[in-house]
Length: 596
Figure: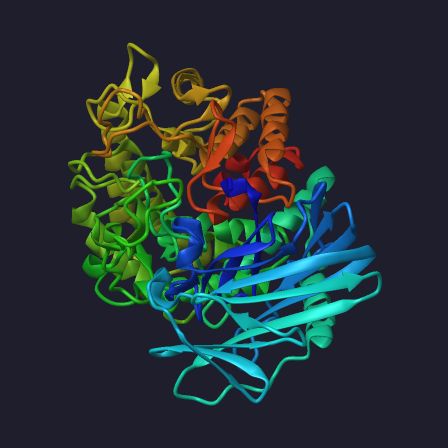
């Protein structure tokens, strides 16, 4: 099944992927970064799945979310009749629940259930028994209880059922996780949970403001972003999956179930512009907790509660999506040095102040310590925005973001009355600026380059006018935008950096797809330099890449016409929201940010 054939359901603490065939092939419990009990996405049926589907091959399948919600309806049209499956995860109460309701629409349809539970990423077979009318599946610390009126049977380490539904019939299934040493929580009422979950999501999405002609698209992406939020802490994971490949059959497979500081500014802008100040404050507060301490120990990413140890390992029993191994959990990039991150942190807190979010009492002290550390650290090479696993370099984007860090520090003193050595920071800011212009500019090609002295381009260079490093009218900005469009474009979609000449700067083989966030950046860049019609056309093309449920992965392969990378990707949806909001207003995003 293609990546885009999946839908997303979740309870703002974890999420599941539901296939067009009615199979839930990925679910980690009880958190995004917990072990998966359904891992067929990265292996096969034997690694865990839960399928509910008609016995007969459907004539066609239709899917939709109940408007404004993450409640998924899949309607199967069969020769016997029509049946609808409603899938959802109620907003977390005492324990995570997965609710599935099979409803007869017309005729009488024979249905089959196939439940294969494999804890610990598809490796651990549970002990199964019936207790008080519920099917109990236990292995080690994990337990799942299945409650349904349908009679189920054990069948070669799986649980199966056969039943029929006629028009008007409703057959519920509720699967609940709990710690195996504790008694099961109170059983959920499926009808009440369906109604309550719809009401909760519609109330939340109904508060969305902005987007103009793309208001519905913005709302849909914000629902996805909310689904990727870990409600107890406010942290937002990059994606709910691990190891969905950036190259089919290749090794660019990473675990994205963590929170990246690099996402901070864009996430904050999207939430604030759409009217979600509460979520923006929660994200700001998560950010401050995560970076508290010695700045030299600041990581580029953390666990959803701020965990630092994200040790990377490989799961050799999983073959990988379409044979794309290895499957990894944890992420070794957490230990990399990425000098753009302080700039992202400083800019996000600056944007929060501009929006009128009440300041955190300790936020400025944290920022001052961060700038003190960056005064010497900015001169070092790093691994860059894209977490390359090749040798560290002096990446132009990283240096630009160091400029941003000192610039936002100066503005905090000058415009918000903060206490700090503005003159010293201004001098460092100007020094960084001079160095980037001197060492990062290629006059022969009229473009900035990926790193000092290199010939490569990088889509992150599109950020130069967005953060105010140079105005969009500067010929060097226009030259860089046109160079990226010329050299990193595949059918109009933008790659992060060249990956088609053997081993690239990231130290890996294989060409990856176009990076969707970078293409949204191109939308913004074109709008900034006055090519609005071209920007709108590219934006509409990006909207057309979404699957039938409005979801986007990390990348897109224009040649194969398929999504690639972890799914759904928060960064892609953040890019959609910000581009829609930018295009719906007269002025470009760089002008708004520079005026601050």
